[in-house]
Image 1 (cartoon, helix red, strand yellow):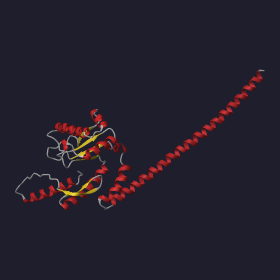
Image 2 (cartoon, rainbow, N blue to C red):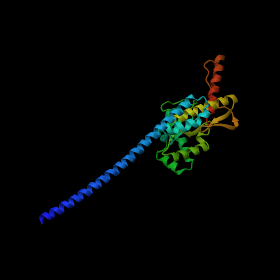
Image 3 (cartoon, rainbow, N blue to C red):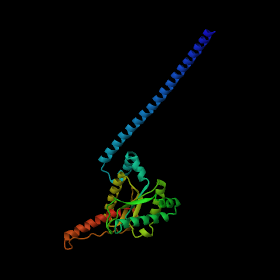
Image 4 (cartoon, helix red, strand yellow):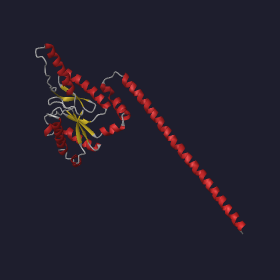
Length: 276
């Protein structure tokens, strides 16, 4: 009796062991197949990245070797260097920021800080956007002058005001309102304008385009061309070039007078390329 029981027990045990062994083999094959597909996908990604890097190197070489105008380089630089090569974290940060340019500074740093707070508050509260108002009241929308810690005297060109918002949607809403017109506190800054905060590559392109537009304005003797969103725009109605005085060091020097006029014109045509 006992022998039959042991025989039956070992038969069942052998069947269980065999089934477990078969199951283990199936699991091993399944895991091996999955890992093989996974590593295959990784290899595919690596090959794609390699192709992108090689393509970027080719584009950089073409840009460096190119002697075309800044306008003809716009599409190549913007689509390749900014969208692909630039650091994603910096792009995300700048997607939430506005650069406000052309607002003069006050008598001291503290007065400038208070003034900047008030003009930002006015821009937000006149927008009619309740979410913007709520985020501003909660301290989630802030501003600072850039570069930090380098104040400029009243009458000199003020540093850029950089505005940081919680997300891109709010940035776009406020920027659209700021571009629609100036408010009471900033009405006198007729050459001020707001734009999104540019990346380093975009700044290089913007400066090249403004230089090109400035040369066109100098030839025309009028504010006829401005730069807006990486395009040189021709105004329908030309305007006078913005005036910025230069303090003479020797009023009796004709050489200084000629240099002063040339320097002043150069500054004016550069400023004039900025969008209003």
